[in-house]
Image (cartoon, rainbow, N blue to C red):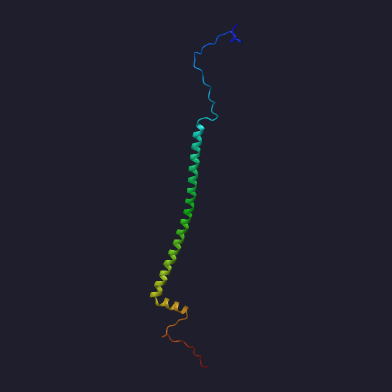
Length: 119
């Protein structure tokens, strides 16, 4: 017996096929999960941006409505004041009425004095 064949008499066979490399470890996640995560992240980001823009739009719309109402009120008040100014400049009755409020009287106006009746 030969010293090299201590455990077996058979000669080694030559491999006809190439030696297979060890298999790669199989993936724990399917390939589509990466794409799904990217799509989900994109959708969440878009929703967040749009929600914020919608909220700002609602706030600005309310502010715009309140400012328009205030402008309408001030414009109406301005028209009333312009009308009053016109009458104060041109209508003598209005001028006299306003002058009496401040205690003024016309100089050529006679004072009425009540005379007691004789009995």
